Image (cartoon, rainbow, N blue to C red; front, side, top):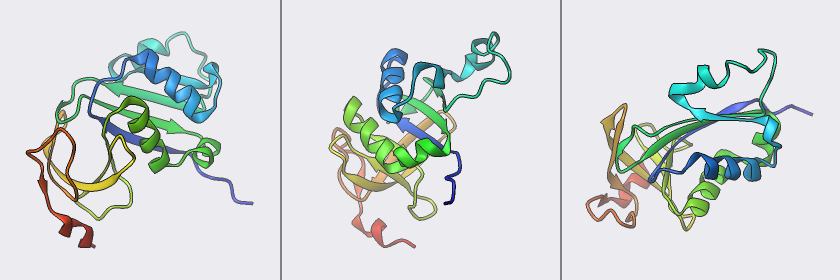
Length: 162
């Protein structure tokens, strides 16, 4: 039997999720104990880990940032062990997050180069193209309407990209 490799899920969320709510979600989503999770603001990781022994391994290691603007309010990344990948894949994770927090989530999946996957709160999946830089991300075209963002142009031909 082949062992699943560890991976990371990097996402943008359309609204800021308080750390305590994010912690509860991650523990429930991955079905792990509190001691198996590290969660901290990206700017404070070194300080948060200062008293943690160097040999401690977390099953899930999540950092987040609130300095995102445009159509998104926060970015976060979750590094997870292979056994957690087996429990919750990337798309399922984004779907659960979007539904739980009533947000849309942007992430890189299996879409063609230059596009991003967006999961809406109802679980709908669409592809979108963005504009922005490191701390700003704006959707400008998508394969379907994005609720609350009438300025995002709809172009179903994006589904045809290779």
